[in-house]
Length: 144
Image (cartoon, rainbow, N blue to C red):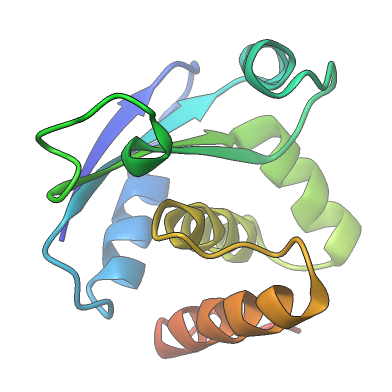
């Protein structure tokens, strides 16, 4: 698996990149994807422009296979995951766990969306969240 990182925020994101690389070394997948670290303002704009929801969110994924246009790289490239670091810090505090756990959770959650998992109904949610917990547990990022 290959992960490309881009940071649109000020501050060092190397710790987050190393954390995410460590998580995904436990996942057998030969494809690649991008993780873009963004601010509250940028993720709110993305959320508004692409989802019609004018508020800050924690993570947004755009899978290449969701695109109606044919993409010759879609078999190899999964797509993009936008993670809002400021929101992740807020949520880590709200949930009483580390920023590492939250960034890890958001990266795995976004990755599973790129792979076609969803949580729009209880059955799908159960499957996706079990897979999410499996990956995070293997990486040592258990809840609580």
